[in-house]
Image (tube, rainbow, N blue to C red; front, side, top):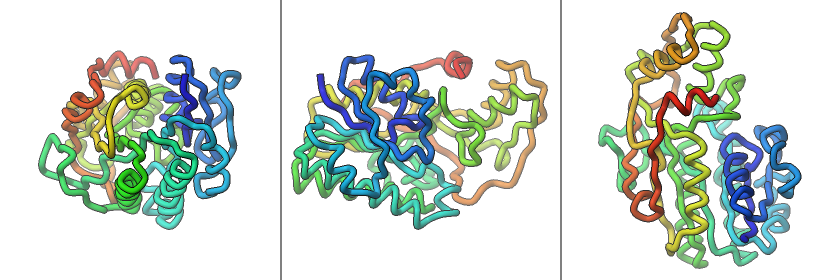
Length: 303
């Protein structure tokens, strides 16, 4: 059994990771300021975890939380490109400074293994698809800049202090607990919410843009593989489904599942959005034996 700290552990992704580690028999500590995370997300495991209400911008709180920790899964973040454009300073404070604080706390408490939630947004609007980890990174939004800068801090701390770190460049994650009411929520959550209500499905852009979707249970699984994995230094890995679908095709699948006759409404593309996204996931398969396979319709029906 390991002692595991999950920053952002009450959030959409973090809560699923917490559940996975609890079910695997580990001692789990959730560190969250509940600005985006929700206590109901962890209600099913509340008696099996320790919850620390804290902010990654507060180094002292992190220093205390990291005592006697074996593994950190760092998922606390401002998680949206539009939100980062609206509030770039907060994005850098939470995402970059917060990650630096996590790394400092890990170093000072001799934590030797860590996973970090980066993002496919660091690639920008690349034309080299499927994109692999050697693709140059681009800062096309404050969110992408915050994640790219955090990756460099991970590399520095691993090199200087022998912390073994996996940097996950997540593609489009979906699943239960994704908040459709948020203006910055993922497209699947919003489409399903609209289909259930018989409302218009709003598509930003012409609908031909493509995305690589991955269910959140696969994210929880791959974080657990890091804990068990034997690796050294920094490993950067794309985490996606290894396939692509257009946004219009996605809307049609969701309409079919929920029997919706809702009209699709095409709106102007949003600033910072990329046109195409599609992951090469061979690195995660090779190093962690990651299996990305899933059935889209089956996963959508769980939501």
